[in-house]
View 1 (spheres, rainbow over the protein chains, first blue to last red):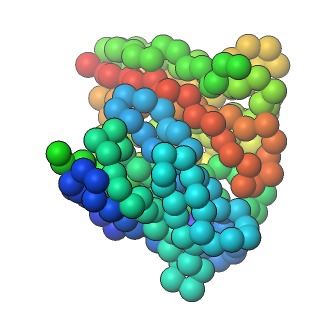
View 2 (cartoon, rainbow over the protein chains, first blue to last red):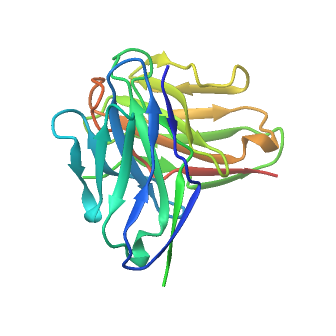
Length: 116
Length: 115
């Protein structure tokens, strides 16, 4: 079984400030990790994903995330946020077992609020 | 190249009625997933289908909910005798193959409101 914990339900940040959205996971096997963004009343859009290789992953819109196996974390970062980054951010894990759903287990989401 | 198409985007049903949500996967995708998002919560997996087969329905409520992905046409999520607690956003996603790690692409969701 796998699970995802997003420690912060809301993160308020001033425009042009850096931000980190935290994500921890638990799984008994190797995992694939994802961050999705959801703008109001829209579907989810993939920001970035970690499958293997370099632990620092760069995504769209200036976001990046670092996979830390020892801490079972996959925190999302951006050095300077914009008003347009206001959205809900979801961390997700797939355990790669190939069986069952082969879909994703999502965290509860973090609402990023950018203040002018 | 159209993405995952869901309709209707918004649906209002009275308690006891039936709700049908449709999902057309991206071109070339044969794997479909349905997720439900309740207010203030993340997405919860409901069911995983391939053409004409339900692969995993471990997230589906035991009663009133069913899903299909026929050989021709869109995938359908059907909710019979809806109750207020069924009010949620329902998201469909698709992928080209089963291999884990493959990106799945989401539709824009269907918002069901039960009054």
